[in-house]
Length: 499
Image 1 (cartoon, rainbow, N blue to C red):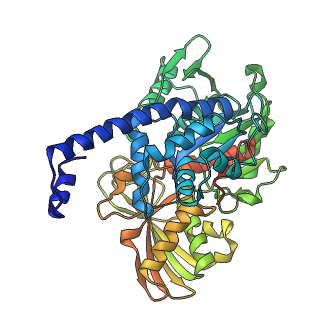
Image 2 (cartoon, rainbow, N blue to C red):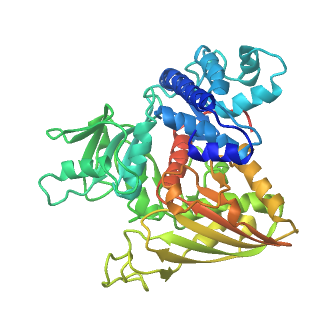
Image 3 (cartoon, rainbow, N blue to C red):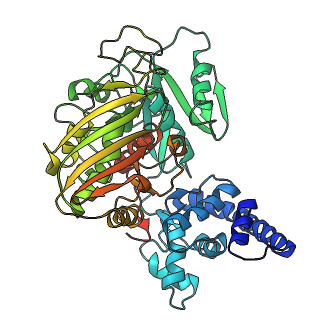
């Protein structure tokens, strides 16, 4: 509690005494102690049971005491009631003593549900009803030894994918990053430079863990995970089996090959089973926006595309709006952070305008995201136009959706629908919701959502609406790619409480 809190108390006529201040600090210390006690239980569930816990979709695995308390504080922004560690700790303690099967459990939502629907039951009785499907199921559905994964390319998306996979290594029965494939650089210390780029990031901060280098065998060892660095010039020239890699999924984040013929080269290498492209695919390749059309993924698919960051940001919101209100037509304007594709200062570029200095100019350019939406949502084919403006920020973008709806609504109703969708629908991993007059782009660095609806900016006039959707075009998109990867690897475990 700070000075601002006490000013608010005085403004309301509530006397603030020394006892109040001392009592408030005592409460804070007590909550710190509870949060500290939660950390080993969260880790035990993850490493021993493959149970991923969260607080209203906010990650709490490998998080600090302050991060855990802040995740609880977040709940009051979107629910009519608050949530404290005192509420969630008994739930977590009971979970840690159950023989659970692999799952994703939202501890915050379970705690709120127990407070409102517990009906006098004990915590254990409540949980045995809520989690009946995974009680006494430890180890069931786990891929023994995990799924081997190869990152082909180690640029912005490749390094963030590496961070996500290393962070989620758990007990080693999920997704295992086994190798990184790059072209050998000219520097004698090429391996050290690759590791340094993983260790330090100007946007996303330092790597959370330890990194060491095995120069002799060309491995980067991240949090105990040995990752082979393979130098190659083409996708079809590598025998991965010589490194003990088999039936691997290759995540191609180079963007060099985008059709079946090009990406099919990966499948010619020994040890490769499937390929995911981190860019829009061409031809008959399925473009998957996870949460929207992942039901199209079949066992026979060997090559899939994760579409683009913008397509992932807007499609879940458009699906929700179209399902509830209908979308007659609309325009998508993307305000996008600059990328490596642009020049740092004015120089030749094959594309229009992109040759001008990225850090100095707003650059109008084209985007295929509006048309790409139709690949995931065929019902919107031909209904959307789109354009883009590249702006002088290194990360976090915004999509402005100007839509003509099938029926009239108002700001409050539309925002309430999107808030509820972000919390309780099948799109809760894709759509986040924020209602603050103070947020700016840097507040969304590291967001794990495909897109975040800015409720304060929503405009409604009858059957016309304008929605502002933020998205971390690097990390949020990488999380969507990882969800496809989890699906293919068979580690997309059931979520509780059920939507």
